[in-house]
Length: 294
Image (tube, rainbow, N blue to C red; front, side):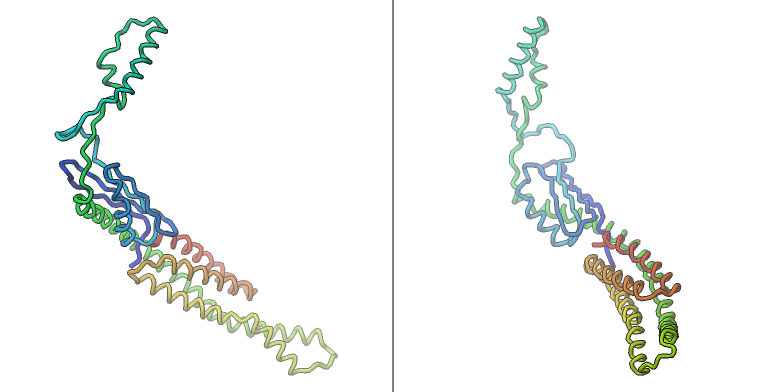
């Protein structure tokens, strides 16, 4: 069963007493493109995470984030640091402002303590190698949740594809049944026209028959109809596949579009032209929809 390229998954875990959340989402993209946002303390895990995801997905722009659930207060083991150069510069600037404007307000400890990044907590660096199994498990859970959503959306796409394929096949049947009559009518009209133009002139009837047959052959659409039917069977087989098939289907729809264009250029018959337009319309929708398939 086909899968959509769009999906979302989420998983969380407790590491060293802190909740970490992983979110992953996939959007339409011709190739596989993975973007990862990690806390600085887990930066070395970017390559292993990309590798795990690449083994599961084949197409799509994938965005992965791993973050602490919320800002957390320093806990036992955290160390507080004071950025004295920053605080001195801040204090000097406030002093100059007081002097410039003749202000009497004191520069309090509370004011200094509120300087952004003046006082900050530095957590001990986690043992990333030790934490990797738990993080990997969390990533895979998020990927699984996203995959389930992609499968669910894929079921809707599957139904839509078969609906449009059925419509194309019905128009293809009309083309197939109409084609022999059109060819015979073309031969008859061509023969009559040539007889008109050569009235009173003796011509080689064998050569005339050969030329009529040659021109009739150029307007024959049988081969294109057969190839379109073959392509339709291929599409149906791909829709039942559990493998990523988006690129293959995209190529087949391009080939089908080329075949139906050839049919349209070969025939001026109204009924055939009407069916060609209908098939083109459905093909355009399928070519747009296939961009959503992994």
